Length: 156
Image (cartoon, rainbow, N blue to C red; front, top):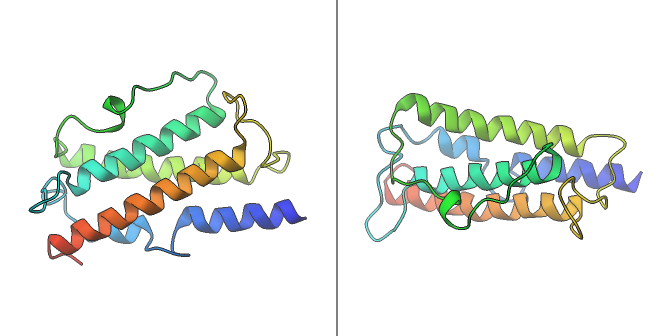
């Protein structure tokens, strides 16, 4: 019973809105054209930070459930090679990837035979709750950066 309540709380935090604005609301405020603009004084654009969030979330998801897993190269693989996305379709696909992976994480958390103290599929000493906490902390941290970028661009 206690684990079910903990899972329910993790699901709420994964969605966002408990302590920070949901990413979906921030994405609604920026256009494809402005997503690659770096505000004065910042070394990254909205796109770069969002790409990083999507990549890291996918990496943790794969670490937990993928049949095969290869550790990405840090920091090279976790950041895009450009401050802007090439096409509007790629921008939309990146957003869809974020939502798809969030849904996969929700389904993973909600699995009834899963204990949050279990070891992820490719883990050694890690626990599933640790990996989920990483996603929550990482997304919350970078969601704050996205909000700052929107403010500096005059969009929030």
